[in-house]
Length: 398
Image (tube, rainbow, N blue to C red; front, side, top):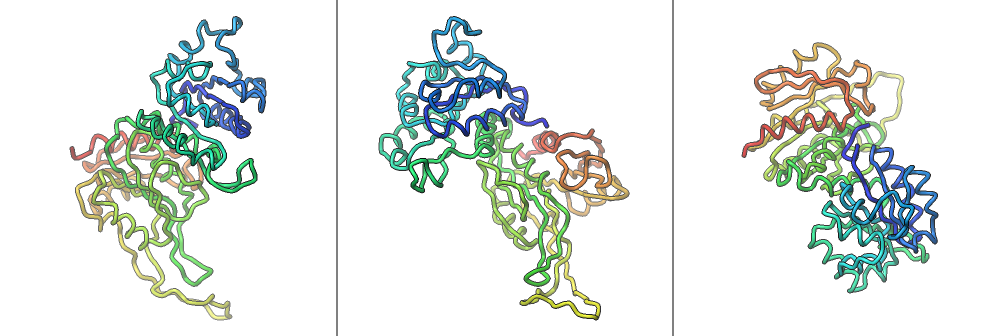
């Protein structure tokens, strides 16, 4: 599946922490995302994990020595620095962070970083007391001032047996930071994009709800694609099984009313509102306090309309709606453009192969406010997101 890392050259720096084993998973996921990965290991890292492990995953030689006469690179720190789209140090030890802050270049990794002009991501991993030390905090602050993306650390059980801050972030979070680092100065930098996702849940009683089919994948892909192009993203999401994307504001809601209130509170600064959520059109007029017991008689539930968020949203921002249809796709979508005063609507036929609920792909038709129609081929939801964002960018009220 295409994404921000497809065909990108990633230099992965691994330093001497017990968290080195997690770097193997990161290397694997980078490869699966379509990246070319070159690994540089410090001496300490080789004491925890062998270079062969990384070579087996990346199918590339692993650099451990600045003066290796058998290397495919004539001068590693120059060759890799010139080729890299991003350098990621994961895990980054206290010692490595201190060297980077001072600009030292005494091993293959630090010399490569000093010679590079591409984005740098540093993912600390250490004991909590080491992380809290004033010198470590000062060094991290120095790196941040230079534009380095600091990924974590996370909180949890540490190798020392203690619980606290200092864990290397999990792979999905690291991938989010890497994508962000490469795109933070992208074509949507300085813009705020509000995205909704998931299917709202309207309670009938404490057990039952009225909801819509929605995995949330399209909305999450839109939020991540906007982040990867430099936008400040607010993701308002109904319950899903997806992990929270990194480096954006995530607001968790359940009902249509909660989603409306959350979106409304962020519209003042919004440049675009993209409503990918499957918002319930109706809700029970009253939710029972206790579980409704099954009886022999039929059950009738009185329903009231929920707030139409796109119709109710006020402000000078680009409005993008979605229309999931099972028939008369273009006709029904065009009607919504006028009734909701949309700048763009994304219509998808839920019966089409590859476009069903929960799939990683989507086949959509874009219809603008002039009712011009553009039918896209079957694409990954991330690629669909970028095609939508291309249109949104042209609509910004600059």
